[in-house]
Image (cartoon, rainbow, N blue to C red; front, top):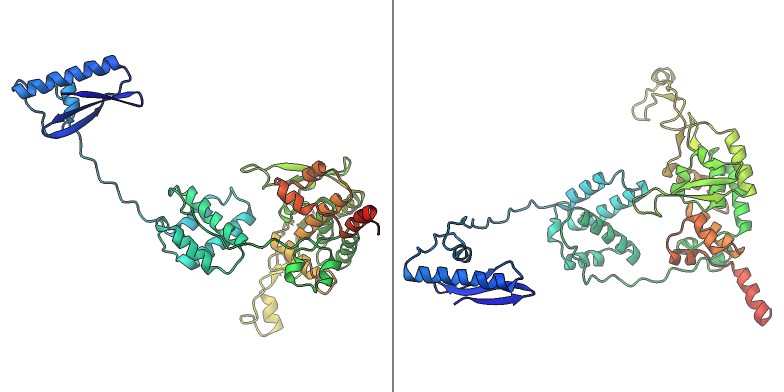
Length: 426
């Protein structure tokens, strides 16, 4: 006897054949069609029982054969065992992911990913089969790395991004527990940090007042190790541009007549190079006018001249050798030196920007600056303290996250004291 069952609107037939239960999806939602199919199967079963119809050959779907009235049907091929996939090593995943995304990701992002993979490979090993990764394995990695929770999250995020890029299935991070993270110290002025005794962690929280910015620019102008450094520092201080954005600014992006500059972004819109416009202050307008009057040429606003004194790659001559291999006589040393071919002006690299800033500030009161980002932070803080419309300020600096913007737009302590003094008295 054949019975019918409705499963979520689709009919299935059930019957016994050769001592076993058979279930067959009829692939119809019509009860009339399902009843007709059941009748066909029942008639075929009776014919087999009465000897009018030979049993189906091996390898044939019994239900489909009975539904066809005993007509020949294609035999069911045995399922092939799944093909074993070659193991993906951590080294191979890292190299392939970085190579495939070399043009899609920003240079700084790629450099950071390389560092993350170096740490991961140091823990798990180059030949580690990534597919065997477990939550326990990741938890062991977190326990072995004596760094902040924020850094650990970034490293795991890099691994997860590469894992998803390689389509390795579900990333095994469910239940992963990170160490507790402390709130970042509040941003402080130089005077506040010095009252607390200084220290590397506190100098990371430094932001500059308007007077500090003026003093810093004066120091850089008088001690700059390269002609492009002073205008580049002024540009960062008066626009809030990131270092990577400073390196991408073109001469054509500066419109002195309209008093605006175009900032080329890479982080605000995923997968798209966006731009934003920032107005030029009078001070920055003067600095850029003077810089463009002596600009060495090329499309980049901040660039090295064709030749750079004491540079390994851009000096006026080439052919010099190291101390261990050079000739012992002056004539012998001079014989290998020749004039370098003409070198075109080139955009500043991030390493050059960092190195020249640190060397210029070394030995000055501003040697405590940790890098270029303090200028961006200070620009935002100064504008916020002077009452610039938050919507306008956010457009100038290209902030995506409201949380990030709130962290940067704090008030200068003297203004907070003045505000509470107006309420409760000085």
